[in-house]
Length: 216
Image (cartoon, rainbow, N blue to C red; front, side):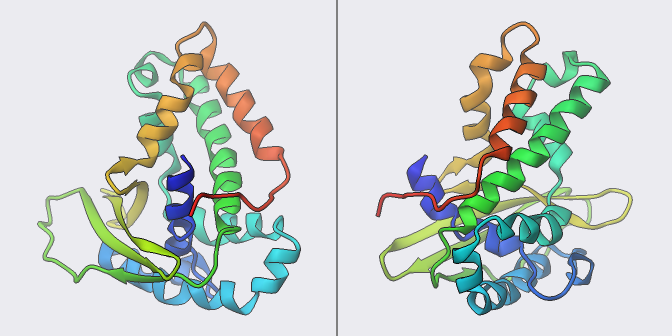
């Protein structure tokens, strides 16, 4: 988990558009989306790094305004639930999705506290079959303090709007969603597990944002 957090310190940056609104990011092509936010993300965090370090809670606003519009939270939440999603009621799925949203905001805000001066390289654009609904875009993180790290961003195309949204990231072969699902699987299997986990996620999300300690 610590290795994932260290790698993911740049994960959020890839989806955080800086001074422009989320609507200004071109989401019609997955490579354009990743490149666009990657080019602009570092500008904001570099410019305001001292402010965010002094008050990490401000990172929640960055995540909500710039990251979350590019994440298919419901799809991600349902993948964490796995087979239980089909057995759950609509209200249970809605409750879990809302809780997972808060959980992601807090988790990504904490990850953002790890920002230093990482550089990223996005793979060249490839032709995409119009029928494809899911693609992966490779990103390599170059950090002077540790070996390069490979991230594979998984994005899904919205069938109605044609826009692409992220729903998972694979860090050195390890899926973020699989890791999250594994963490909560025991509680989800219990009676009223979905409601219990949803409430715990909300409580965890309320915890103050502080800098995470990671292994080098």
